[in-house]
Image (cartoon, rainbow, N blue to C red; front, top):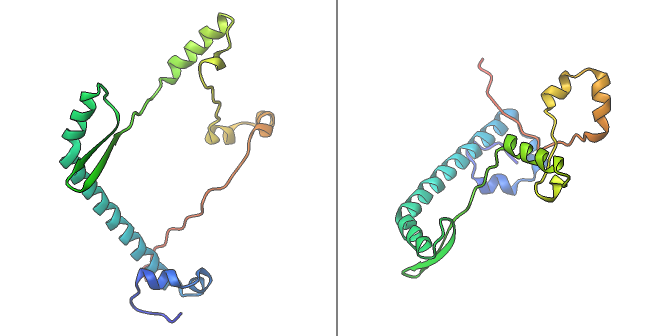
Amino acid sequence: MSTPTTFTPEQVLATPAGTLAQQPAELLFSFKNSADDLLTDAKSLCDHIDQAIDFKWNERARFLRHEVDKDTGVVHFDDGNVRITADLPKKIEWDQTRLAEIARRISESGDDPKQYVEITFRVSETKFNAWPDTLKSSFNAARTVKTGKPSYRLALIKE
């Protein structure tokens, strides 16, 4: 791939990653910044259109949910030749302290709290790293380290 001064996303996508990797750092910086700008613009555009869609059909969807006596969920309706499926999902949050207290009371009464609640244990990685080795060794068998997707931030160095 020659070093173009301008590029289209299609040209970059058509170039094998190994070939892109051989390009100068400044060009990769340019490609990455341009792609990030496109993504930001696309997200802003989608958010703006979603806001307009909500503005247009929110009241109708709320009315249809009210008619079937529900505050959340999916309703369907048509507007001209367009079928709209409006979903207002539930988002449930549980108070962890209160759930722990309820689980304790269930256990004290002789029942198994796992029959009623899901219990998850987690250890803060920051706290784990601060522990002495003797304490860490007790937990190591229960700890698995996985990696996520690598990411890189590119910045031009000012001369």
